Length: 313
Ligand code: A3P
Image (cartoon, rainbow, N blue to C red; front, side, top):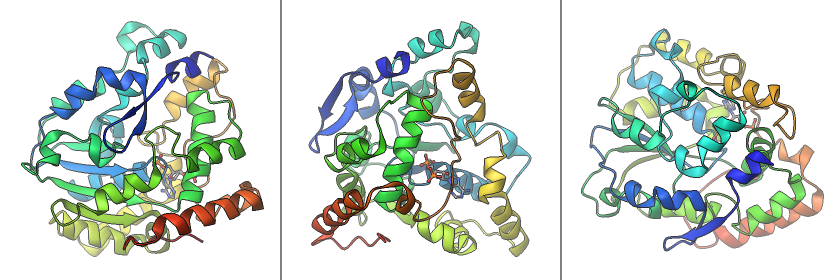
């Protein structure tokens, strides 16, 4: 109930009518005016597409695979710009009985004040990004990660049940997902919003499925984009560091300390972990054949006429 309260009330924003929690309105203007820097490195994605994995890879590449420095929490090294806009966190902290000194800082202020080069995560669609992206006056590097929407949808629902107090079942959630009625709105408008700007933005598209199939190749591609040279040994070390098992056991990235607080207070609707299964095609075991069929029709309808390519099987 308490967690659900954080997300009650949604608004439809911007030209894409993106579904966002009402609380976002308290941040929309500040985010529009957020001062972007050309030396920033941004990771943008639709939720549950491998964002955390990509952030850790990008940060490590940019920081010469400094595993020791990476022991600092990823949210401090690579903050989530609009996190505080997604719900009134003070309500959550109170529900968790935290002492005010334990409250997380406002994500917008924290990100703004980071020392350059800043590493910034966002799930915002292109249309809600700061004005300096819209008018092209700043062009920092952006790495956009995408994933098969069937897997991303299943992952999103588990995420909500574990971390946000959502009581929805997967089949009902899938319906909302295909109707663009989930936080961050339409999966397609999100991807295509960035894809259509690929010639004016400094953007590299990568895919969850290709990271699973050949991580060293993706590491090399991202290193080239970031203009970093890595030795073979560093690539090997980083590949191991980024394995699912390693990430699952790494408290700097696995969100466990937060999940523990929720678990202790019985606020998780389902048990589990943020680093849940980390495989391709898991949806086949979780979605009903009817919903998979609907997804396939939805995908077919939405990819017509676009040149964006993705693994949908
Ligand atoms: P699953 O729920 O399918 O397991 P995000 O960071 O965008 O929220 O994405 C989370 C998804 O990425 C989760 O998917 C999580 O398990 C997966 N993930 C995180 N680290 C991973 C890794 N090292 N290898 C494979 N999948 C990973």
